[in-house]
Image (cartoon, rainbow, N blue to C red; front, side, top):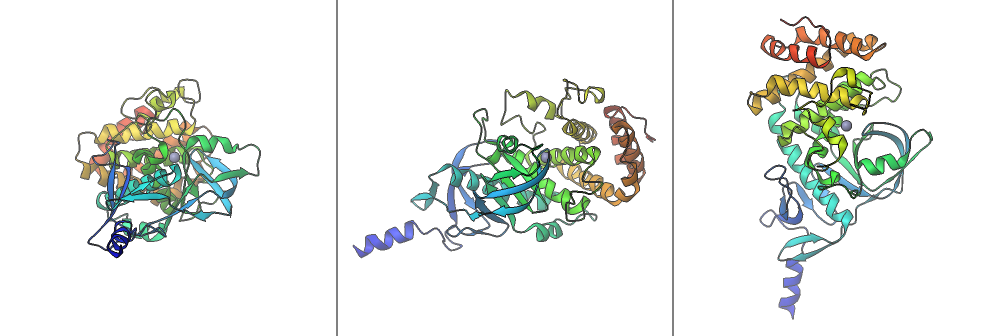
Length: 368
Ligand SMILES: [Zn+2]
């Protein structure tokens, strides 16, 4: 009797020591983008109940009072009744099986984020950007599942965000995740491509917006900057997962996914805002991601990551020079931004990238 009792305690212990890591059945990302169910080891999870993780805090439900949205970036200052997740799982042979959808999706997301953060620390390193400083800033990243958003401005519709499934919460070091819709072959909220993209919005906020998204800021309200933010986030996701079509795995038949595939452009600059690419500043982002991809596609992953880090670091370092140019038509704005940026890049990188930017954005640049 005692033996059985102790055996049960041991088998269901959700907070084991180092020798007995925490195994959870979730979606896997290894090898990347092979979405399979299986027991995963969580490397940085110190305790499952209550959930204690080196980099992440998990929450569910609650309500956010939002003020505005920009694509997958939501701005909200007030939270109501946000609760730390109460995980529900059963345990068989030391493996914990989530038994409801919120536990399953949030733990799957946590597992992907753990992998993304580990890879981020090994690939995004340059003298201009120290990943540790960023991680120290964003820790703990809040991951919030299925929270209602109420917008005070009726112009914004909460339903849109519940359908978009994943968003970065500007100014709050938080990520919002939602239930999958019927059309998702891989839930967006558990898709490493999408999570890596949202994670990059944190890097962008940290670097470009001086660690705090200012909802009235000039940069924060510029469509050119939104486009750059989205394009860099897609390229970052590609560095992490190796996949240049960020929505391709989740929506094999969704018509949005073809405009996000930056390895094969389905539109030209002149088509943006027309029915050929109607997704606004995301289209500029796809053009930027394409230029980076095309100029670096024959390079090693290390070179790609290194040049990508140089690209965004240099762009951040000259933002005060182009802040005043963020008016007028967007083609003219991009011409000024890229013209200022090109001479700051290493000559070989600028030489390879400049013709693609000029072509994709249909501008004339001082390419060497
Ligand atoms: Zn985004």
